[in-house]
Length: 220
Length: 289
Image 1: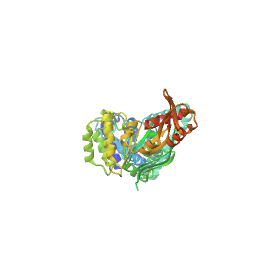
Image 2 (image 1 turned 180 degrees about the horizontal axis):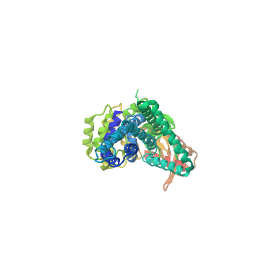
Image 3 (image 1 turned 60 degrees about the vertical axis):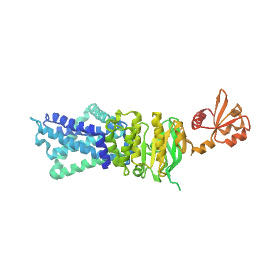
Image 4 (image 1 turned 180 degrees about the vertical axis):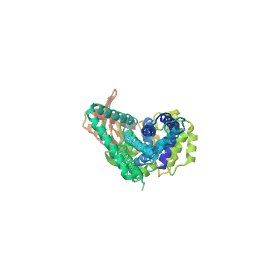
């Protein structure tokens, strides 16, 4: 496992250096103009997830996956290392981005924008983006990101096409929100956080399981 | 008893428009096996199946007695793989690629790599994309040799190489098997590469093994028969694997020399067939015989 992570760090050194500079600056520039922590969590989570995923789409771009798979490692190990490295990158990008936001003079998001609850929400959103995107990029390579965007577009078109449902959807969203608040009230902040962490872990495991099935079937 | 470095039994694989059918052959330790066939015969597919880069439909592959799927990691530790067009992260420097690959192999020898890098003139500070095709191949070979692989698997290693390095590469393969525990499998469609180096040859045609034999046995078994129209029409026609007409008469390929001599006691010439003759006849024969 260690060898696989070192391999990716060495072979993608140039990309990682660029990502390590561009991503925090990008997050900081836009994050400093936002006033809602949840918006930053949603936007920052997406940028971090894309940044991490692009690392592995480079292997498709250079057609180097075959060489990687000829090294002594199983596909499961390769995928575990990808998930671990991606999460390390996402968290690092988010932390650096948050540091830049806090350092920008006149930033609307203060330290209050990065309370544990907000950070946990950012991690949950990263899980949704990354967990959804990773199986698609395993299956389709860089085109997986486009497939993800297309799926979102199709869902948007479907929502517009069935406007009569939106009212119900809003009611559903409101019910979910009320349910979350009620659950938080019942469990207390620490209990709710524990449930959210468990959900994040489970979603990542589910994403990993799907990715592994696709990866083991893929031919290079 | 000699251990087999590689055993392939009943290997099958299907793509749209191509089938690898029931491929079986073995590579004994201490030998070089040439996997030969026309473009599209299935050579690369066999190699990809050995490395588990594609999924097989049926069959079994054992490397030094280990199943290549059940013991994938241990198998790959003992294999050195060189691809026809080495695919690596193009913007990585050779030094970084070497540093990334080395930790995977317990028998990695830094001194051997440094020596090979010097002999091959590898510019370790250059990025992979800046290298010529030949230098990329040399780098791939240096990586494979530096971890003291017991089975070298090379996919079309000589295509696109200049004659000087081609000869050097073939000589190095011969050096590898001085250690009789090691073996080499290399695929090629350049039949002249086979003569000086290989001990065994497996010929693939349209996804099927035509033969897998020691080189000397091929020389003794296969022949080109030259004669007149009687070769095309005579009762001995069944002895031929392929027949073609030329301006000088009719030529046919056989793997039954005694049978031909008996069927055509006079008037035909029997000449030893080269691998190229066999390849051409078999591929044409499947259409015209």
